[in-house]
Image 1 (cartoon, rainbow, N blue to C red):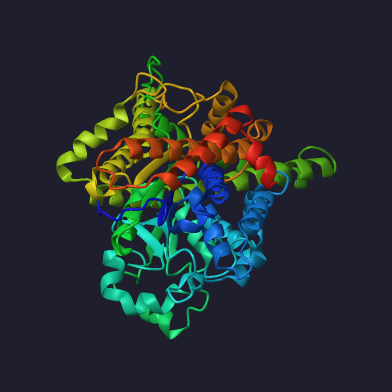
Image 2 (cartoon, rainbow, N blue to C red; image 1 turned 30 degrees about the vertical axis):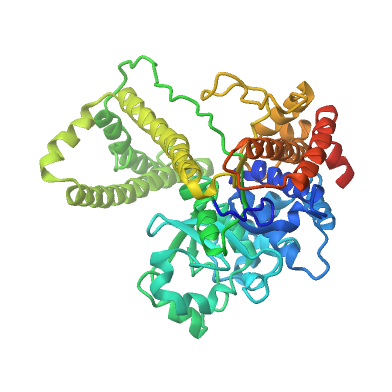
Length: 557
């Protein structure tokens, strides 16, 4: 650490993914930084860089855009953001669904594939909070925030895809050898598309395609030049930043390297949970039902011409002919003509259906056999074919176990392992000693974690978290990962509790940071006078938070 180290002068913020849970925890973090002063100015004024992911990107983009406004005022931004997303006013999901169903929207935006994620992108783009393009953050136009980075993941190389104003726009393989072509268009990327890209979580959404879904004028020379490059000619799939790095730590490390003398403090604000529901095997007993082969054959037998169809057809014809020949009486009966016509129609319909179904069945089966033989190695063919002899209930068990284990691997094991690796990177950097804070949404909820014997509270911070504060934190930390409010969220005031949780958690973590900083013999800080003043202010706020966790939020709204 350099001898001239001064904390709080240059701050970097990481906002994790996690739907609205991340969005409003991040808003709470920003609001408390604005509230607390250090050396006569709010700590928010010292924030020089942000790195955001998924739900955190909604807050990050909104804030970064607001800072660029000539009449920027944080409290005004806070109220606008808050009022936009209150349960009574939040129409994000409703608007996106409406756009998805509206043919005129896609006629007006023919460059975009009709998909749910593009419907969200178009919705974000029309919201005043997010209107505009990446041009706002060009180096010569940037104001307080020197560097902004909104993280996604590419599906070409499996790397973090960075929408950022400095460094590679995208990542090394997609930018380094294509700088001229990418730079010609980067300022035109809409902020709404950036948010959609960063929050495009798997299963819930399909990928956006870069550059296809991002630029309206696809007849421009700049677009054609980029689209003609080998890495972009088929389009690059872009999805949620949390796939590669849900905390935005990797990008902040790169930002720290780019900033002269590095950042003085990096605050990682994380709503990603350490919790993981254990995989449960299916213990249902497998009974005898029917083999796959028998079941398939039973279904296929309906897709053919049956003798019964011909019989019905002939009966209908005979009824009409015999009635016409006066076999049933001295004159033809109208009722018999009608009845015969109905029977004839049914027979004809069934026969045509059987004929068409037979042709389709033969074509489909022939195609499937071709695909099967082409894609299954000959050595495995006999083994694969034996599956048709298995009981259907056993096949169901096999498929269920594989599906649930795969989902656990993707949504829990993989993402949590990535989380551990990124934190290992963060805390292994010796040059970041005394320069890092991690604020988690569940830190103060009073629950023990699998990784500690207790709550992990700092005993030097008084008072200990009150039951009321822990309850608010628990409610916030249990918010599901969604981009909408459901009835349960509304009943539990999730939005308010998340903002308050961000506020009092950061207050606590700043106190903890200062106490640890003062205890470190290698801190390289001689004068703690201003830091002590800051601590006293934090302590006073902490007392109020324990008495009334939402007191600061009440002042802001």
